[in-house]
Image 1 (tube, rainbow, N blue to C red):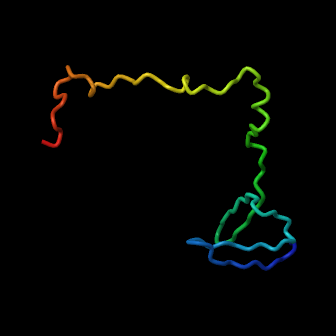
Image 2: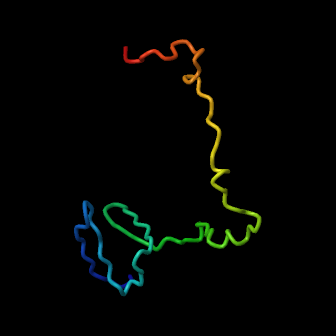
Image 3: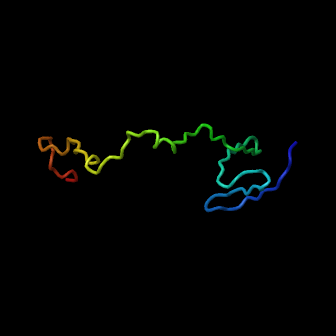
Length: 95
């Protein structure tokens, strides 16, 4: 059996939180997976290997340029309810 530590549960906003001893080696903000089985809880650090880091992507795409303000303006998509030939166009729907 491993080491035993005491931890304290406290109110944090509308939730409860568990304050873990520093000796466990977790860092502030670290993500932890918590499991409950038959009234017993276990927790472990989440492996970030499945996450994709895109911070270096921008420099690796030299031809990628931001859109200009003119390129950001799009033509309006036609809507059937904007068509005056559509049956019922211009009628008050609440009437």
